[in-house]
Length: 228
Image (cartoon, rainbow, N blue to C red):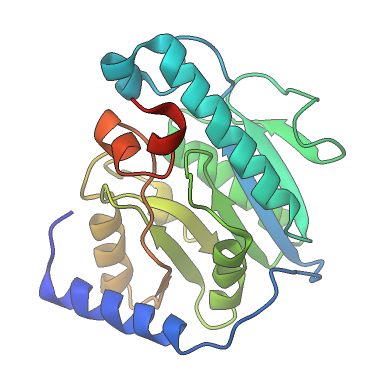
């Protein structure tokens, strides 16, 4: 992602504001909050295909399986309504006693928009959506996302590759999901520029490394697990 002065200044202001916040317990009892988790069905040769080009299908399969386990464990610590969206088919063994759906839409943006819109239509007021390829995701970061929505209608968790690992909304803002450069290094910058043009305030959480390539893996805590 390019490093424009206005974006970097905003980013630093938001990060500084979070550093000044008091510590909190990762607990969320608000029945109007919804956490959405997007999951790819764990199938050999079908997950982490960019990573698999470097480490092979079997290793990529094991890495993603581990990432999903991390995501499940972390999200279970958040005491709020959850919905799990699988890419192809629902796996009942994952996230027991949690509402599960299959993602619907022509592309990632449409799939996310549909899941968020359903949550808003069902009466939820603050919605956080995360993926499942983050070794360092935590209950605290997710809770920070919900907290940020008390001030602004949009929050992002920036990823080191120029995208984002978390998005939170209190309003539809459909344009966020339309005609965007998905999986490109300018995704977040493009989205933030559009929000600025529309004078819609937003918050940014801390930057995290999601796992898409072998370089991402080697820079992450998972490198000690897999030694690849």
